Length: 261
Image (cartoon, rainbow, N blue to C red; front, side, top):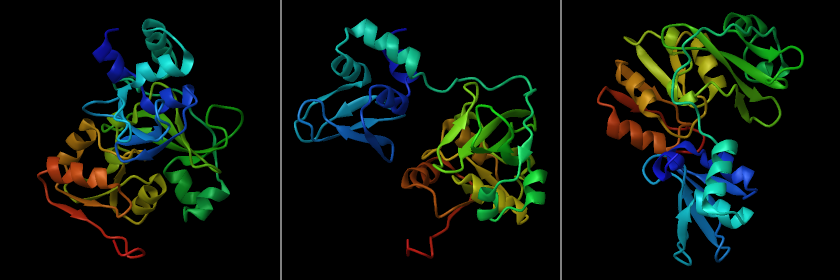
């Protein structure tokens, strides 16, 4: 795998976690401690210059592979190989066959806290998977592609809120709720899965990008097919900018009445 392919294939967050480098999200970047001066540096997580880092304090720069070389005292090829093995990005192809796996989903107090009744959870196939499995301890959302084919379960941990899914699922290629939404009506977009479910249960057309802080090209393509899109006040500034720049259909951005935004 050449340099350009490797840079696009390595998931920045997974790589930094593997290298045991603490990082905090900041839009399309992650902030971390510069390996040269220990001040705050940033690394791009997607798009142009993905996995390239820069420190405004010492003007140091590099990329994710050079970080691995320093952190693990490796040569170039060894560092590149281990990052590809341990921190590969999402698959770039959609799931072709319908998911055969079916979890027995149980009602959980987390759903009650989120205002979702047991009956409604059952209707939308949302719940905590029974038994020992990859999504144990998570609220699982049944995911369909835009044509209605069941392709995955997407989990949110009941305690930490961290997300999890099978390795074959790429959230950049799907929008939760799109298969059942009437795109001729106003579509409510949110990054919060529970908010999306509540909107659907309220009779609204709603979709969610599985909590990603940005819109993939596939997400933008899907939203282009909607007549009107209303964005939740919970979206990131990055999503707001992406939508305004790339979508030509009527858009509306709601303000959060609680914080005056």
